[in-house]
Image (cartoon, rainbow, N blue to C red):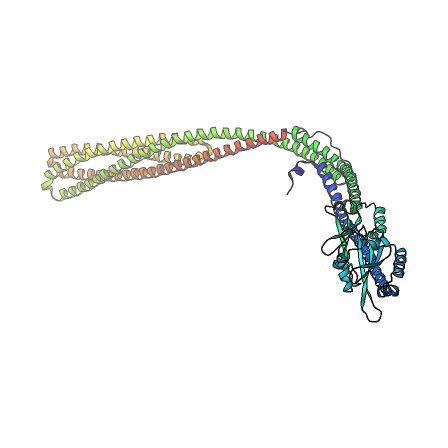
Length: 631
């Protein structure tokens, strides 16, 4: 995770910081480890020095005490002292004690006591007089009791002796009879405890040489009672001293067994050299940090300067879109390669922008042409759709007219069928009249009535024929209009033109057939009129009936033939009208399909217009992007 402060630094600052950290952190670690190791080593050396001093003091005091005890015991075995106690003459014993004090200056005085605590001889006369009247005190003193028991004691060492006027160590030994072993008295040797200061003088001088003025030596009992302090009695005790002690063990029996010899020193004095070393190391580290930071700054500046220039160029391109500026790349390192790659990228971008501008111009022109073509095509299709709509309405009208014509043709066919049946009935009646002339009158009357009805129906057929002719004329006109609209529709109206042509052909055939039917009907009408006239004449000229009946039979036979021809013509008209109705249905179906195709074409054209609009938008965006750079 990146620290917020580091995230705000630029490349030069980060490089300086990273290089400094890479150089300083190992240095600090090694310096810290080395300083700690050095401090531990020096602390161990200090403790070892204090231990040596304490051990030295212990050894010196222990050796001195052992030597003094040995001396006192040997002095207690002196013959003159024994004889003095046995004879009660103490002149020679005084001389002996006086000589011993002169020889051993560490003793402040020597006194010979009897078993009852009376001082009988001393190294000096005043010393002996100082014990006069102190027998009880002497007998109750620890050192006297210990001497009677044959041992030494250090009791009352911490106090100033009232007799000797100083702090002394009472070394007392029993004086025994040489042969019987009887105890004769006690010899007291007062050891000047201040002589310990002479013993530790050499150690104190060594401490002063080391500039350790706080160094001191102490002697303490097992109960932590102070027996000796090199700084003097009443000196203030250090708050948190560095202390090392040595204990007087029982290896060499003496009066100081269990004593603790302590070497003390103030931490500031003891670790002064360690602190100086730490300060020196700290100063060296700070100097190194400054030098490394300066070198890292110069290195970062050399690395970041080309990148800064390159960054300024990039910002100018991004802000101004100016690709015309000249970029320079120097150096063969990674930064130089980056600069050269960026110059190449700018050149490629410039070529891309130029190509993009040319492409967008071409795309814009193409989209404009597509738009114009689509608009023109939309106008053409709109007009075609309107024409197709009109044609579809016209086809619907033709279809309705064709249905009416088909129904009328069916009705004419039914009437013609009935006429055919009547013609056949007339022929049968004529045959019967030929066989039986007797009933001719009735048959002639009936024939006249049938001929009247036939005339009426022939006239109806004529009306129907005129109706069919009118339908054929209208079909011909509609087919002509359809052909004109098909020509206006172009390629899409070719199929419709073919159907319109067929409709015109069928209409022409219907007109021709209708004309023939009209002619036939006119002939039938004339024949019926003549038949009526002949019938009237037949009634008037009954006498001439047979010849005229034959003539009427022939006429009726001809009329039957005409009716048969009329029936065939009517069937042809009905077939033509049916074909015309089927053609019109095909035309209407084709018009419906053409309308569906036209609608699909309109949908496709609208989709093309949407695509063209999207292309226009893309072209405008590409132009905006391309024009944002100056090349």
